[in-house]
Length: 364
Image (cartoon, rainbow, N blue to C red):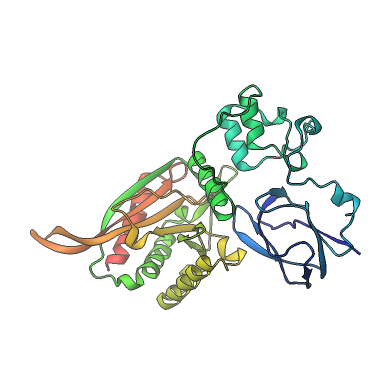
């Protein structure tokens, strides 16, 4: 008997996912609970095991496609010659001819990815009035651009076109939303790192941040439905650059960990991020984020806030500089520390005081 596997509800309010990578091929035998497919969402990439064993009869959604929860992805078992009726109605990778697609009925939810919605907003196109040519009537970027050009296809452009997929697509959409929605302001000050063990820089910063957030709870928060939600837990995200793109694993309960425990946890999460082995819960639930590019850090950059958080702390290039101490010019190991904050909910004085509190703890 054929088993139709549908995209499951991945929680966190997610309504769709991208087929990042199939771990099986049609005609291949798969055991129950064996790795089946990798699904990318705007939170993370999740490896999903097969709920049934048997022959992979038919893969219905190709890699790179974004589909809503409940879409049949693959058929396991059966002879593969003719899928069940529901499966036969599922769209294939080829675009549906425009005249065969249907506009959404009145009140029906428009099917479009966040990227397509952004393009439509920029071009002034009403998605509700468009006919989607993608899977299940999904509106594509081509549909939007064609509507903006009075039905004329977009003019060809030069250069190689590379489709954003997986982590890079998630990063693109996530940071686009953060930049569009958050009026961010950045405060910056010097910090004397001369007495700081740079081998333990990240855990020392996490410890100083967690202690300082207790004094400034409005920075350990998130915005939900025009309200500031003050959180009583401390999940500090650490930005990690990987070959696949930027990933922000979360050190949960950072306020309860010793320096050695913070060091071990940061190293474990960084290794997992680079190997692509992080679990969904290790990428969720952040309340504040810390970023540092290490040796590649510039003198100063302006980090983007990790939506829906309200602030992010940056550690920038640390180097020997000439500074004045007690009227004397001396050489000290200095670096800039920044706090980028959501000015809708945090004022500049509080953000500055928080940054100074972190610096004070690092210098002492």
